[in-house]
Image (cartoon, rainbow, N blue to C red; front, side, top):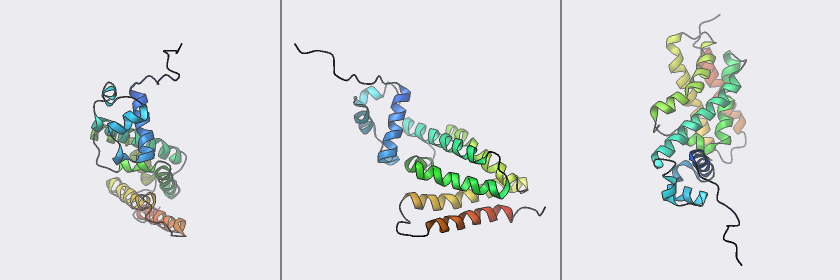
Length: 196
């Protein structure tokens, strides 16, 4: 007689399980590839079942952006602890690059236009705070901190985005290129700071 109990029971779905599966799918296939159909296949369920746990694809993409930004914030905050000035800015540069290399598709997600702007910028608080503390610790005038912080991030993002996309494939001395980007970012802050 054949048993009516399945050999393997499906994991019971809840919101966190669905979002974690979506993040795994994004890591493997890319943020732009994410769809409810692919996610349902990933979870071995029906698309209609997903709507018991997430409102729609747009909300799911928004949550992935927010969570990715919060994760990057935790990475950056760890790098910033106990550091200041040029040393701290350099540490943040390397940590940001490390995050993008570890989670290239989640990094891509946070560089898209935010879907949930309020949630996204709340999640960005740790990154903004860490960068602000480092820039402020060089003695840069308060009025210049936001613009300088954005300039530093823009320079880093340009390099990191090109690197994780594979643009630099075949360049032997990429570390030297990155070191020059970091030196430029540090110089942008330190040179604008008043002499001590």
